[in-house]
Length: 150
Image 1 (cartoon, rainbow, N blue to C red):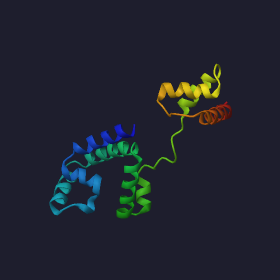
Image 2: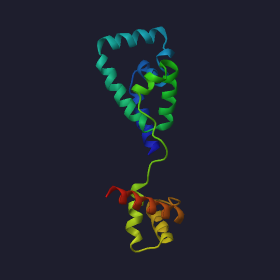
Image 3: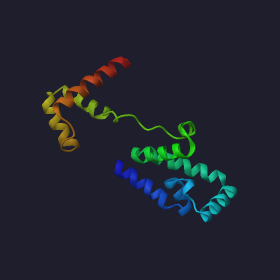
Image 4: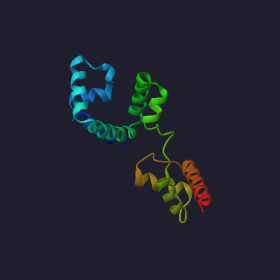
């Protein structure tokens, strides 16, 4: 997933003119006088286009947390913390939950024991996807979450 997200982000940036790409990758403070002139001309002619590009860049950036973190740090240096936090998406905290895997494990639990479930899920989703100990925790947490939602 991360690899595809990085490819999508790279493709988006590659399609932009050099000064627009530089704006997203390095910030306005890195512009030469010529790039400033191009940027000012573009903003005067089509300010709404910047909003569209920024929305798309922001969407793609959310899928690549390392790049998002780097972008946020640069924006905080250039614009200050409060402005950055107001306009940029937050960085997802922690690792994504494995709800789909947990649901699958719960369904398999009806006919298999925990080590067999781990083996089966590793066959389906690739070697080293999970372990018996991880499966036991996934099932426990999934059941607790679904019970509290009822």
